[in-house]
Amino acid sequence: MLQSHDKVTQLFNILEKQQQQPGDAAVGGSADHDNVMVSYATFVSDVLPQKLSHQLETIYQEGIEKYGDWGALMPIDPLQGSLLAWLTRLVNARSVLEIGTFTGYSTIYLANALRDNGVEPAGVLEGKPVVTCELFRSVAEYARSNFVKTGTDAFIDVKVGDAIETLQALPKGTMFDLIFIYADKPSYKRYFDVILERELLTPTGIMAFDNIIMPGIKKTEILADPTPLDNPSAIQEAHQILTEALDKSSPSKHSPIPPSDKLDELTSIMHAFNTYVKQCEAVDHIALPLFTGMLLVRLRAGKGRGSSVA
Ligand SMILES: C[S@@+](CC[C@H](N)C(=O)[O-])C[C@H]1O[C@@H](n2cnc3c(N)ncnc32)[C@H](O)[C@@H]1O
Image (cartoon, rainbow, N blue to C red):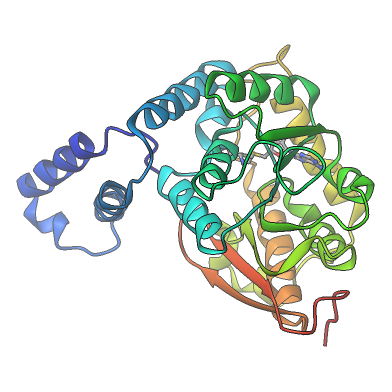
């Protein structure tokens, strides 16, 4: 996945390389072919002010210095940031909820889009218009420092702790027009259920789940027999992996790519989640094979309350 904002240079480099290897360039779906598509799309889509674009690039690079491979793999792709910002503008969002802050890279795209919508730092909510949830205090503190650097801190409320507890503790009547979920995969179903049960999404709002298509989908046995979604040990294990990876006392000891059996388990969990959403009558959704798989969900008119699975 490309992360650099120096897109034109990258694009030309890739094109130049392909011209030297015309045989490879003709093969659709190659990594280079995908990179050209992403680079070009990013280049022609970019709507970020140049200053913010450079600040985001710095945040991305500093995230790598601080968190190693995790820093490289966790943040969304810049084009994905532009897509989320575009969706935020499309629904004329006044408030945004994010589950999974990390360095705050994606949060900054969302806050900037709200600013484009004319939302003031103290918006329609009692507090700040962006609520973002992060499990680890040290990570949340680091994200806050990035919000200060980019002048977005007045828009963003970072809630530390398990996101489920944060959602449960939101004042009654709190609603969001855009909800972005990119955190612990075994909890996606619980996030989905709580958002519907507590009516956290506005009737015209959009929920976006990231990372819903995992590499193991090529294995038919996983698709045939998905892992049950209410699996406390899987949730505990995923939290354990994250805790260790983000523990500064043991940097780089843990690979951000889980071992293949763990990856298969996550693939299986995500397949069960995707199927669960597909069967839910309360929502209208589409899964996109973009980035690491994105599921866009909105409420069906008149069916917002509860998660009615057929
Ligand atoms: C993939 S990263 C988020 C990346 C970020 N959205 C971005 O694009 O820059 C996932 C984050 O979710 C956090 N997380 C994991 N489990 C969580 C939970 N139960 N509650 C809140 N945050 C959680 C992790 O600590 C990690 O920082």
